[in-house]
Length: 232
Picture 1 (tube, rainbow, N blue to C red):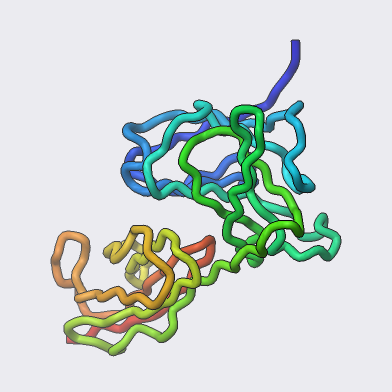
Picture 2: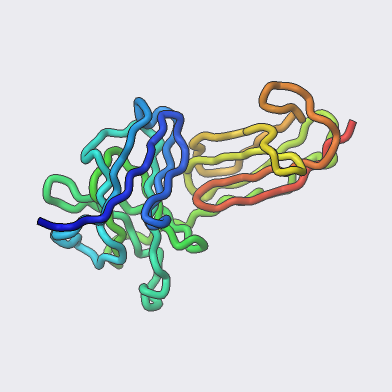
């Protein structure tokens, strides 16, 4: 007999972000990553052999075990910077446990939110470990290179931004009351410089009134906002 605590999370076929265990574990699913809406169990897994590195988080089981995923699924694990004792967080990495063996997945480091994110292809057991025997992780950055231009605008304005690593990008436009007006982008994009154009219309294609609007760009666990003014 024994006792185990767990949580159940909802994975949607439409995709989206999921947090579990007070944010210690996160998942971001692209649309179509799962064939239908599902319930997944998340819990700490004990009694496994250690990976070939020092564990800095519990081992987490995400089930149903070995469920194959479509493209565009990222798993992130949170770490405690103080617990690293001054060691370089870029030497962290995510490991997965399958068929009695640990496999190094690596990941992308977001030091600002103290998280490491890696793409996964199947559910199972995952753990965050530290080792200086593997390449240092690249840092995740996501920020607009320039403000929206032209600004103010009458017909259209363009948002320019740069990704240091491939990843899912979401760009949404809101009005001054904080209400969603339109989603400009919600997809996985390669590293490099990108643009998103807003023609001043809402999600139904209707022109919005003159005024102040805001965009919010999210990628790699970070976000950036900008102000836009539409004129007649």
